[in-house]
Length: 293
Image (cartoon, rainbow, N blue to C red; front, side, top):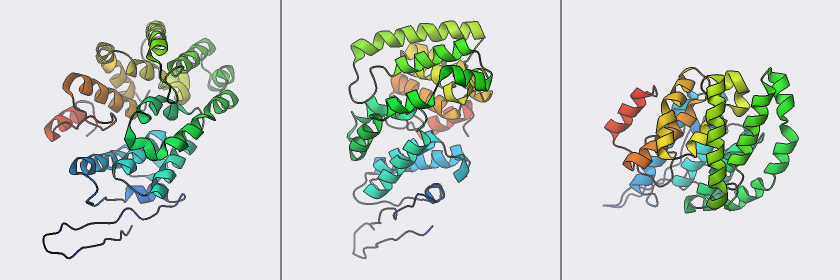
């Protein structure tokens, strides 16, 4: 892919570069995979490094194949474009791609709403985000039936119904921009008890082979919204689930980032807005330990 560079041949002036040319819907993934950002005066060194890191992670996670993109990858691309101050057209296209990938249950829109509406970085897509959220309840009720899903996949219907209820409670008061801790915290505590009971009953992580791809992330989501000590306690369980291909690797990265942010004040994979990255040596150590090299 070619990029148009505007080189200012002025003595003592740092070269400036244009934004990414306007992308198109059909070749979006291929264009993103070949995109190598260049420095611009309006982007800080910190944000430039952060945006590049997200793009590198996307190439690694997808194996540099357009066909491997999932909703986590589209969310990461949206974050990278916002960080790198890309054009409104490209940012909106990234958000549109996320919506298309997340149309089944609006999981990412709900899960990240609290952070998105508290972080000015996401301001360019706030209106689009709110508009999409207003449609999410209808999407959920029309496209997901726990009993039909259990029957189609050969899963335990009681487990599927319970996990679906837990998933809904997890977002009960943290969806949209109206997070209410006093109402959500008791639900989170109850969800953790329910997850622990189910995990004990079924002998470990409630992953893909037990509940399918639609619900494989529910147990992780409850852990991700728990206290740091609980996150640390369940980290080996989440790690084993990823190794056994019972869970997509992205949730493990997000859990590691949240634990590292809480314990050390830095992160490795860039999933926590506003938290600085670890040193290169620390990043490599954690990547190697959890199999992300």
